[in-house]
Length: 370
Image 1 (cartoon, helix red, strand yellow):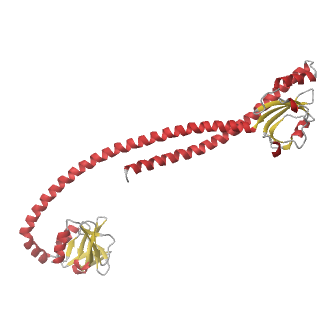
Image 2 (cartoon, helix red, strand yellow):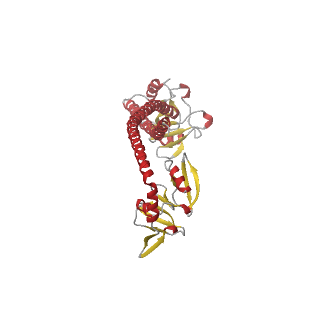
Image 3 (tube, helix red, strand yellow):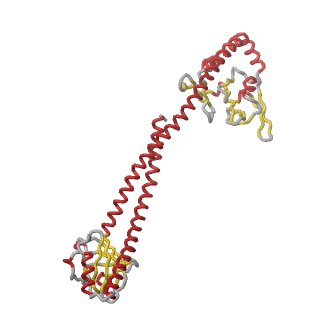
């Protein structure tokens, strides 16, 4: 895998994890904050309506007439902002006594005006809540054709009168505040995430670069050692060729004369003697040497491949590699494999691929042609 691909995959993996965690965290934060703000607004509305109600009660106790008390309250709330929240006062019959918009004074709340869902989940029309003369708080919703948004309303009865002080909070305004807050958090999150991701990407590149530098140094050292070994192998090969040239003929005769015609192996408690001509190949597996016959039988043998190649007829058997000694009669076909390698197809078949390395191809061809 190219280095740039590795960096990119790691970068995107970290990015996805951060974005997923942050997305669900922010959704939870948004929902939780919205609920908290709604609850706080309800509690604030209760407190505000109660404090104003207590203030009106005090004025009545001090001997002020109801008209003056109503006039004082109206003068304090007139023309205040009604978009986010406001205070007004009704009587128990649903008639508005005080309102920031003077045009609404005297307006009567009927049963079709709005519905009220209290914080205890009880639902009724708003006029019934006013008629009850009880402390209450909840959400007031309007018909769709009224073009008014829902409100959080807290009502408080003024003792010594039939007045109901009501604190209103516009839900759309609250939701807009929460949305604005969420967008600010989101902007900060995006900027912070970019900084974190860029930092992570830079750190990952730095770590990998340091790791690659170390590995490249190790590879260079290994290459030098391999080159030295190659030179030694060439020198050794030259010496071996000179030695074999002088002893090849005598060695071949001795090998042919001294090669074993039979081998002894064991199967459970049975001692088995096999002619070498019955053996298709020897192979090494898990540090155990096995022989496989042309009839498909397989036995382990207490000899190494090095000892076996010295013991059998080298005209019949060939040491293909470190794992296999093959019988020439078991070779079904020879295929060109990769660059300058040969692949042996055996009959019976082997579980592993038998390859003749490029260094032994010439020797193998000589053995085949003998």
